[in-house]
Image (tube, rainbow, N blue to C red; front, side, top):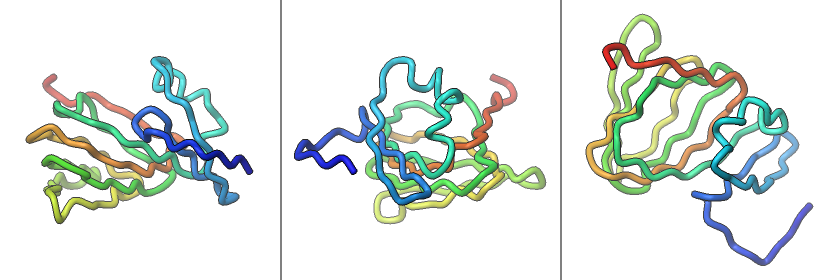
Amino acid sequence: MLVTDTPFDLRRTYVHLAPSGAATRVEVDDQFWATIATRTELHDGYLVTRARTTADWPHWEMHPEGEELVVLLSGAVTLVLDDGTREWTVELRPGAGTWINPRGVWHRAIVHEPSEMLFATAGRGTLHRPIEGT
């Protein structure tokens, strides 16, 4: 167990929650997302991230291995979900801004105003697909 007395910014240092119960800091650099598939130590458990978004997501995302917790910290976002049989939306607003993306359901975000969001994601096998017509 690593114990430090230095707080950190969750936007630049993520946290990996391992199945063993360990919580490990994960430094994020410019290559982090480009190399995430090769970071096998992060595939099990959950990755906790915080992100600021000012534009609609440019793709769909799906997590086949587990649900994803989404917490809107500020702003306004509409999640668009697609389970293969239907598409529906969920409005995230202050006071009602927590959602669980179901396992195996495609999702993307429409951003209505600059937003801060917290995610706890089961990342093994995460898939992306383009938004049709873009």
